[in-house]
Length: 185
Image 1 (cartoon, rainbow, N blue to C red):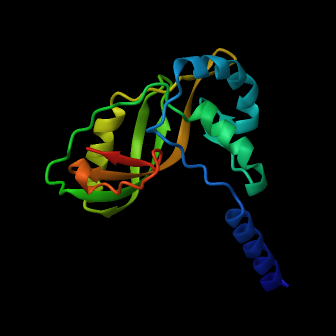
Image 2: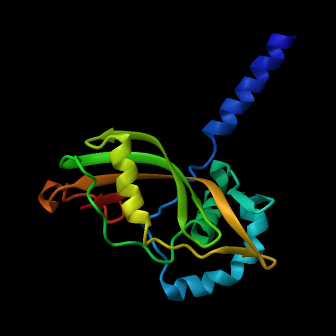
């Protein structure tokens, strides 16, 4: 009986994880001021739909695949920057080439990226170099602070994945989509 219950629970967890929407936020995309002003009025209403808040901290809710549109709206409202940095500093010792970086981060009460935690890197940079690179990028990246009922909140445990290309543009694949999450330096 215990084994059947454990098997059923494992199956349920596996299927719920495999049918959930990817909640990776794009820290290199920004909303224009006009678009943000149009969307800003919906943040208060959508906060209870998109976020789980406790204390002074909120996390994005998980969404099923059939609710991908809702997840996209939530990402647009709560984890899309209003200003994105356009400059990066190449970390010491980083070689030319591509690196895929997966990381977690938080958006502070002031709307800045804090608490970067590298999950994985693959390519030319190691974890330390990837961390330095991201620190350089996020220094000037700004999000609209989250204010619900006149209280400021942080948004924690956000996830992002980017592909960084260090070197000249001659190394880029000319067929990459314009928003392919490929950063160049």
